[in-house]
Length: 507
Image (cartoon, rainbow, N blue to C red):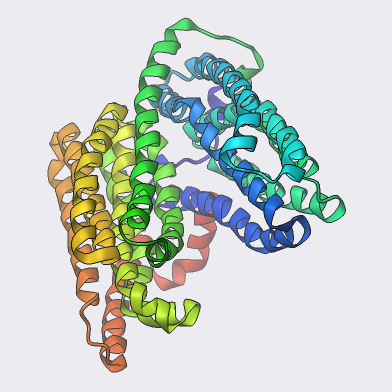
């Protein structure tokens, strides 16, 4: 079993492994996103607005009920990584089966709840048209039956992440995400019935649950023997419970501002705020991909080699900077032009400052994602949950004040300040947990703050296009030098071809 788990290169090998695994994660998330862009218009044409609305609710239900894993997917990742880091690979299989058994029970509970609540939701909450109610109830019932498979798949993905097989994980994630859109789209072309379309979605989920299990057994042969042990229940639920607090409170801080803007200002004002916010949040796919790789690497090295964990933190910060900073600088400098081209001059006039402030917040939030992965990877999910509980009332009060003073611009400022508070708390916790290397932690924090300040400065560059082009040239020059230092680490230009082969091989 040991050879099966450790035969592939992992992110602990350093920058190269971190880059390779991050690349796999980005591909696993971006490919299905492109498929969605091309298939969703077809859904709307063939199914009609009402059916498509119910279908989007179905997608949301699948996403929301994934919370019923109670953080166990993330818990099995960190605990499996810890076992491997401590050379106790024989404990990974019983740990995994214990987590999967708990998640299966939770999935059945969630499924029963979803099926029982379907008629109430269809008739009274979502106000589905009467002609669609019967097929909508059947669709919701099918979704309920699929939830055990959906939640168990989360656990199986956590196992693959825990043993750092991001290649396998994303080779499964890409076709699953792609077929989750293509299969129901193909059914809609032939038979635009909501029940049939959702049935196609469910079949894809069930099939890939079994495929995930098959590949988990290939990676960890000991999984072929069933074994549940009570001693793993407490640590799994302890970590997973705290992780669930963050999973619940986090989305509140993301979406509460829109409700308050709608109530305080107008529904139209929500559009000026939510449209750039939704677009910019897609950029978080980059730091999320990085932190997903960092999380098990930190968990596996924290107790054994905290200096290596600190190096991984620094490399993840550098990688996040290289991938996000140029996009952020360009978006801030040309926010007005971008929005004018996309949504018109009138919209841009009301929203370009919102985009600039939110872009700074997204950039800072990228570093917060790295800090979040480090703190949870160190086994302290309780700290991230407590930080979110602390941030929530502070953010609401700040949002209420700034929204009343400055409108949607104030809401954007409040959100960005909240991300700065989040990053500060997470890096403070990292420095506390890693007091021997706290100077390195605070150095990387200071770099992040300095880069954020540079982005704030980009907001005040004169509107004259020559000034902005000159500033963009300066930023590009600094970025190219920084990127060369961070990514290539002294590799000579003549070595680039073999270096790329090394990168793909993860050596």
